[in-house]
Amino acid sequence: MPASAEIHTHEHSAAGGAAPVKGRLAFAVVLTAVVLIAELIGGFWAHSLALLSDAAHVFTDLISLALSLGAVVLASRPVTKEHTYGWHRGEILAAMVNGILLLGISAWLLHAAYERLQDPQEVRVSGMLAVAVAGLIANGIIAFRLRGHAHDNLNVRSAYLHVLADLGGSVGVVVAALIMLPTGWYIVDPIIALVIAVAVLAGSVRLLLDTAHVLLEGVPRGIDLNAVAATIRETPGVENLHDLHIWTICSDILALSVHVTVGDQPAPARDEIVRAINGDLRVRFGITETTIQAESRPCRTDELIHVVPHREHQDRRHGA
Image (cartoon, rainbow, N blue to C red; front, side, top):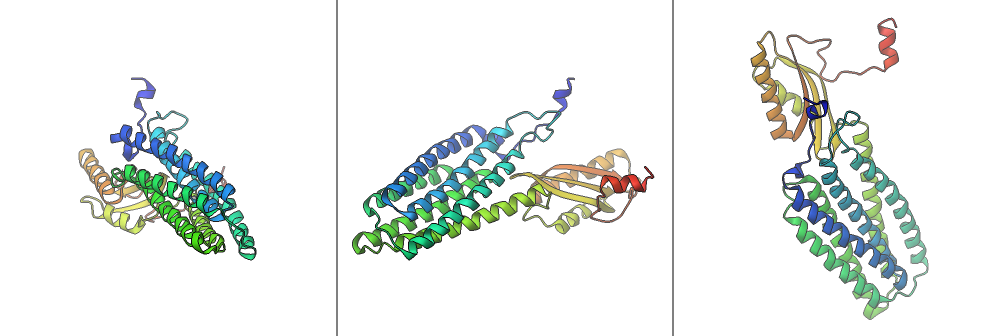
């Protein structure tokens, strides 16, 4: 058998219906890009900081949708000997770049909103309202198209929630325009911009913290390491476990490695224990990529979390 045929492909949860999901996400990316361009042009033309702030929010949606689409595309790429997990981590790197960009954009928006509050400027409200309503309709269409897959695919669910959040931003801009149209209270524009900018800033900080957590091999958000350990211990035939590690490969691929002590059991019984553990981890925690080492007795430690020493410490310990 060729070596490449022995490499297992790590597929996203979208793999079963990749074609319709890919098509819907591609449609969402294109339409969101159109909304972004329209809001940028409309914001500068109408002198509306609120519209520009919403464009920044739309930009976060565009990146989220692009990441979700990219995840589906990357899942279809074959793994290689150089990249045994494929290119799934590209999603995390892209998210980190996105977070850094958004941090800068939100800082600019906050500064601009502060200055506009000191000296409110006239806004071309009719144009602002037209663009905001068009954005609201477009986001509504995108949300409707994604809704059908939002319950069975983590990537699509994330993108769907981003679009729903942007719907709220569009509603805020429309409300601001409706207030300014009859009253001429142009100070409403920077107030709405300030609110949206704070939301973008919070989102960028949260995104950077999440990506840093993934890159530092942290236990995935929402996963209780002790609960995972208890589930493994409850498996018939397992005496104890140690060296438990849980980490994130990308948004919907979680990985685990662990040593389990099973006593002097024959090979078929050990295989059955490993199969049972894998089934429980997949169903209860969504952990699909596992490496489980079954041992008669603990190989070096009985600690649940093993401190991994640096190479120089290992060499010193072994007299190298």
